[in-house]
Image (cartoon, rainbow, N blue to C red; front, side, top):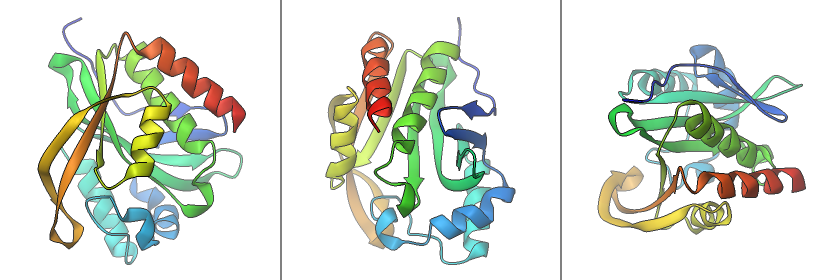
Length: 196
């Protein structure tokens, strides 16, 4: 295989599905994405109005080497958050999972675990990835603990990595799962999902 081919698709999981992000998701995203605390460690602050939400969707769709998704709660057909494949590098069979956020009601539920399971399964089992990476704000200890819990390997800190909201100069902590890690990580994620 010379490189992976990432194309828009719908991923179906247990109680949740990931759909390619579209403007039709704007209202649901706006309703879930207005809490400032939920965006503390993301590069930009929460949505301030529908125009802001629509612009964020446009920017996500136009970003190079990215594939953004809306997270949909099955049954209720309710938009509950968003996530992305980003930093897609087909020639290296590698990509990143990030920009993941959920509305407050769906935090600390099994949805984030199921989303990670869907994205990682597709990356390793269908796209043929050798590496999937995650980066998180060094201040975001909850995210770091969650990545460690699923079996991702902490690789190190990129100092002064990016300027985020409030002109804060952020250090980023990198984690990865590689193809040889995947069977153990899949087992952990499946157990975590089944417990929630």
